[in-house]
Length: 290
Length: 208
View 1 (cartoon, rainbow over the protein chains, first blue to last red):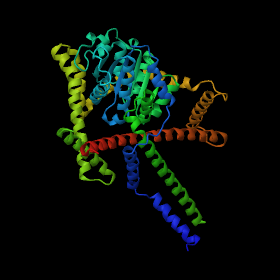
View 2 (view 1 turned 60 degrees about the horizontal axis):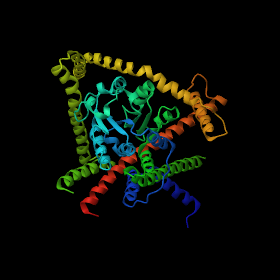
View 3 (view 1 turned 90 degrees about the vertical axis):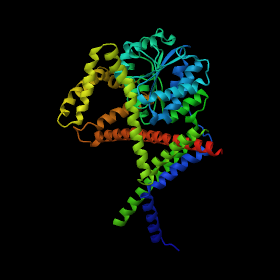
View 4 (view 1 turned 30 degrees about the vertical axis):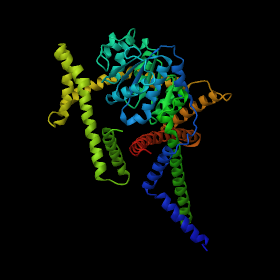
């Protein structure tokens, strides 16, 4: 038989072990919480939030054949979150028959954008380069490039990614400044990104701007929706998954949602257990002092 | 899957596992992968910037188009490298000063409008209890005011004033919590992508 005194000592030892748990145990649980749902998906349901719905609607409500600038400012480090958004944005625009003018302010993003475009083009083989879409490529200069585009886009990007003269491309006919574009969509991996587009372009030229960003930077950008500086926001992989759901075209983001949900539950449980152990130990130490 | 794909993706798998191995403890595999990332990134950036910046912005305008004015910013750029010399590092202050001046000139005129006035206007929306939207506006306005009170240090945070400041810090905590939650989500997303890559590779390799 274990008396109450021994029971308290055993509990204290368990709590101490929990409080000083080896972090590698947590890593193993997180790894399992991701690996198992990826191997055995159950397709957990998730709802679409208002910022994502607004993002989708902003494109859906455009006049057909609109010219949309998609600035893809990210690199491979934020690819898991932003690449699915990039594909989904291209897909929605092509599906509606809009024209895509894409550019990059991050040097290492160009190849990713080309890859995303090629992936979407498999579903729209009739789309022609220079007529339905163009990649203006990467331009160094960050905010200066943005401001310069407000004066003249062809002068800021004299040639496209493939070396063609921008002024000669049919899609660029009549496109001189932001006034000639219906919408601006930014896929943002950091700086320069959405914050700079809001500062330099939305506030200066009053362009309609939507953003797809990493989850880390999403809390910073949510206020821009309330203030009307953004027409919609996709925050991280969850935002991308919601957007894919609206498009009825599940991609890598939607497929990752099971793992995302399970791993969050595991993180929550560890935080909960850690706090319970901390407060219980604090209480027992106080009792011992008395 | 072709031989090339097997080898390159196999190397990517090995490097991924090498990076993950730091979670157990520091080891030579992690060090190799870490140094490779740094070296490859630096080399890749150097080449990209050479072709995207030096050639179109310096070489072509100066050599092919005789636009000699472009030499001035080029000189400023070269002066940045004097930072590596103890004797001449003071010279690098000139291009830094020019860079900061341009940065401030581009940012300051619009910062007030974009980051302060417009968000301030968005905070001053109609408030009430009759609809969820009005109640949300009330929460936002109250949260902002309480958080501002917390940062007012000229009066001691006691009594009613202290209570308001406490609500302010709770508001900030909610903000930090949301930030932390989304950061976890972002990091987990990166892990999911790597696991997906490893699963797909092994499935293709062994055909299960």
